[in-house]
Image (tube, rainbow over all chains, first blue to last red; front, side, top):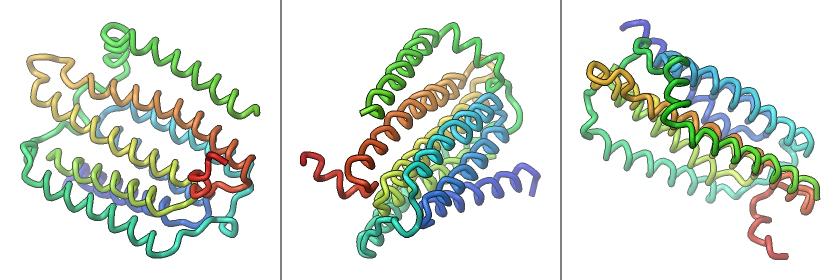
Length: 165
Length: 109
């Protein structure tokens, strides 16, 4: 077993385990902390695939900005495990069964798909480096990039307008 | 490494997100499960871009770079979505003093 296999399985177990804990933990603050671990593990996957730019952006944007926003909102609302609304257990079971059925169907459908056995690059290849991504972003994708700045501006105005009332 | 390992990892992560979103009634946790689903898709896009680059990288050195840029744009949209969504949840909490999503079916009143 190579070191990349070990790293892949370790990161996958960390990702899936902490994602399950996000859905299961009763205290919302604990859910946010588990979600931060999930995002760190996903960043580890990106770095394992040598997508270094996306790994760092994932850390800064998700684990940094978005999670701080979630944590602020939860602490502003003073939520804890006691005030947590509970569904009855049959609805919870129905949710788990629905997710499991989707998992079963998609695994069964993709088990023999065309991609089976195709290799991918790990820790080599330079398309994930910031030099190449930046060059593509500012030549071929410059219009969507500028439009996304307008999206951010409108989201900012919208958040302020909704939150001010 | 064969790409289907990443396919199955992303499917599992996506299904955890769906099960969590159906299971919980706290609006913030439903929102976090949606973020998990977005991240599963991002992971799969990067894995496929690396697969595409291995197959066509010899003829076209920038093959597969589109996938990683899509991930970048998905992150942009997710950041905008989170800011507006959390503002809506805060407004809902201010009105009904709860983040139970069952209150949302009485949005009219």
